[in-house]
Length: 270
Ligand code: URA
Image 1 (cartoon, protein in one colour):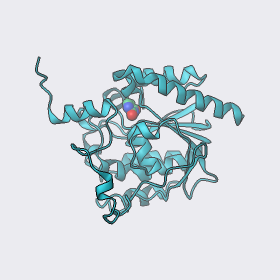
Image 2 (cartoon, rainbow, N blue to C red):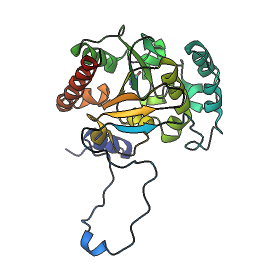
Image 3 (cartoon, rainbow, N blue to C red):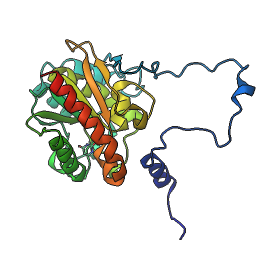
Image 4 (cartoon, rainbow, N blue to C red):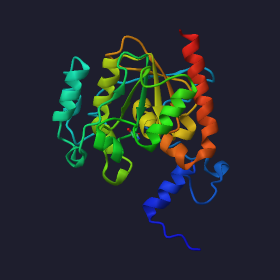
């Protein structure tokens, strides 16, 4: 039976299947091309980490270099906020992003702001937009079960998203939208000052780690996240997004491994 898929659906299907890096359609003879000058290095990817060593990353909290559109507004606004209440207010007042105008709510956070663990997802869905809380729809239910499997719940973690406004039709936020919102989540992390970050999905992982690899390459590895407003680097574990796991149950095995690594890390630091 022929499949009636739009290019967008097809791309989404590839992403779900783990195809998140572009390669050529025909094989390349690397011996033949090896005498050519090397292409310039890719801008965001840092060198691959040595095994078992966490990768250190630092974040300047400014999306100005990434986002030509907001003129640094979000970075300026977020930088002025001294506590979570001010940050929430600033985000609710921010309107330099069209997404904000179509969303019903600014989905700020849920859980315990004093917790040592901060979970960060991509962007709110319909239910989250309606209720103003992150991860309360279907993927949120799975997130709760994932957390419960390692003895955590919303009293022991704090939950937010890279993009606080719902993209219409639940589409993935664009790179520009993520870049505009980045100073908010960066400041959010600084104000919460967690000891451990769990990043759910490729959007959160690449935005906050500043890496170009897809989630298949990033998940299950320890990174370190730094920014000027944090007293020390924070351990980071990227893993699959619960929405992806709902569509791809076979990947739960890897997610489970990542969560066990998180549990082990917590036990080793308590
Ligand atoms: N997906 C996310 O990434 N965040 C939410 O809050 C809900 C679904």
